Image 1 (cartoon, rainbow, N blue to C red):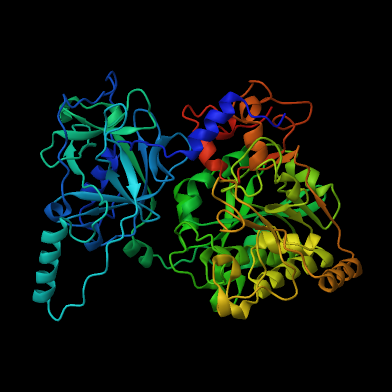
Image 2: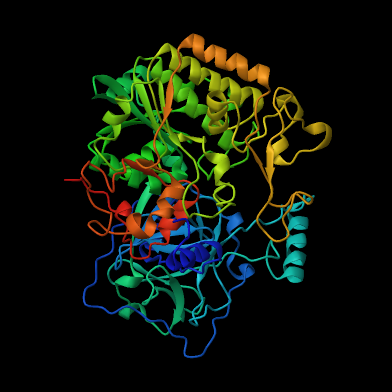
Length: 634
């Protein structure tokens, strides 16, 4: 049935409303940074696990914490970022600190990477790798606790002073008039450290030391401000282990070896070859450091499914070493942008390690990443090996995954991205609403495909790249167009006249003349309609007939063949959500979350957690889902 259960409706409502989550106590992290000194370049010893202690239930005794203003501590933008990034695990619960939306929660599997900046006053400021700063919300939650959140703190640029003295005078006036050093909006919270006998630290959130951070006793995903505790009495819910994932910039500069090592691209590719079904296959993936938490889950399922190697295209110069720092469980080699041999305009990216910009302009980091991805596949196929390209949010659940794809015996086998089932999140998953699902019956997904090393397949891959370059559309829209003659949600554009889909209008943008207009679907909100264009989505823009006939003729001449993977065996995000209560949200052995007659969970060979379903998984407070616990299938 397409009708969601009551539990499903409650879960969807939780996804849509802002969630207040707490921050895990940051003791060991700040301890390690403190021990490192100003350069923050040495690793800290892990704190001892304290046994027999109870969890703190913070209580303020009716008092309220007095927030500290930035002019009392210094502001984070004036402090140099060393470049080091850390993963943090609470000793007591084993949960990692993770930014989910703008909430800070603790999860068993997912984690964010954080930077710390120490002010001259001794206070610390903490930001996630995307640049959002942690702040204690001054509005108490429903349970009476203040909680931490992430905020976008973007101070205005300083004035252009004629002298240092003039600059100081201007800043002083601004501080008196606004109450903060640089911004009139929410500002990051400072934190203070008190050393515990174990070597870890208690984290105070007030200058007088009366208030501290503590994991919530009833909900371990939350961290709250509490009062009245002492450093002598703190237990494991306020002690944290720090793992350095990215070295400081100075340290990285001293390491001259490239991520790929001294081996050539061809030699690295050979090290990743698997022999499956009588063919040489390379499993390829790509991501930046912003996806390291999901990558660790990806690795776990590779190992559980008897896949012992893969080839990683890193997008930022940091990911390869970070993966090695996290002790990846299977062998891998690294490729870089330099290996792709693309023009400079496609390889120069600022802040490539941050979360990708999802715009489709030719200049966006996201677009360039996708372009590298298809070039990566082409270069591997040119070495005579088949390529299995899988995004890191594809979880491979069966040892039969690769052999069955090989046995399909066509040039291209690509996953389906058709919308089916009860998932309804039209913002994050276009056309997932039941009224619009019929428009997606032939949609394919570029996040998972198997391509043979044949002349016809190479022709196809080059056509898709040309389509991306000519019309400034994503890899998924380009592949869809080559296969079926229409895009999914992109409006192909005249590259010389700007970007229609990014809101450029007038003479700056123009739809490409070789394409017809898309279908326009109204938004589902009460005030969303085609007249005001709120929430509208362009859909399935088709080629004009002469262009499509030429492409079909070329496919036939090259002998190109392809198939779509069946959703009942290779599921996508909507399938994951639809079967959550009956299968994917369960632990091993419950309901359909068990081995069927064929290897795999419930008959699935893989599940792709796209369409914002990572947030769905992160809400699994108890980490009950078997998807979060990779293990070999017997």
